[in-house]
Image (cartoon, rainbow, N blue to C red; front, side, top):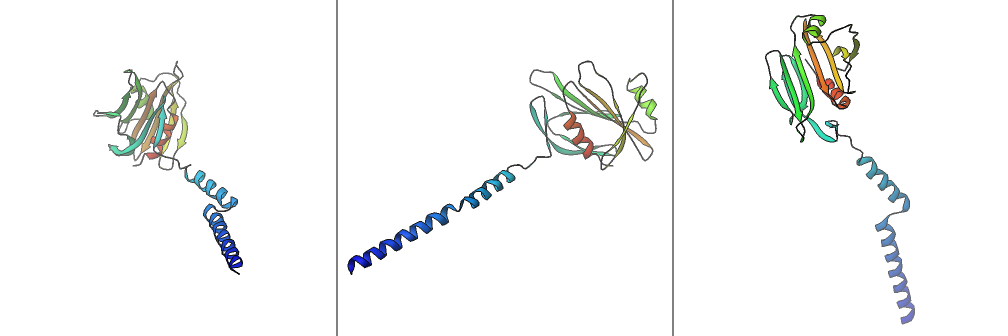
Length: 183
């Protein structure tokens, strides 16, 4: 009788240990579900992050110039002139990574502004828009394949020119800054 009770007790202990192991580890389906959830969670996209020439920056500074509100990188050097504001960033080797400028041309025409900026020749503008603005776009050719882009925004009778200049690919930076512009 003692042997039967001992055998039943041992069997119950083994069953409890087996249940504990199965419950603690979860089924294979639950493990796969957890792995998928982890993969989904880790795929969060940082909308403020931009990469230029293997450097990472965050569009983390909301600011304004005249009537234009926008977001820019706080690490960029800012220079405020009467008619325009400029942002730039020098790399460790002292070369300029990019220029970003906003010009206020008041009531001047598109042609007057482009002429003032030193752009010559036959210029064909491309219409474009974001959720917040409509613009005329002019991509000036550059010998090194870099960026010289002008975005002309007519708002309430005033003309603003957004200018991006870099020898690197700054398309992501341009798009994020343009999408942040509000009046």
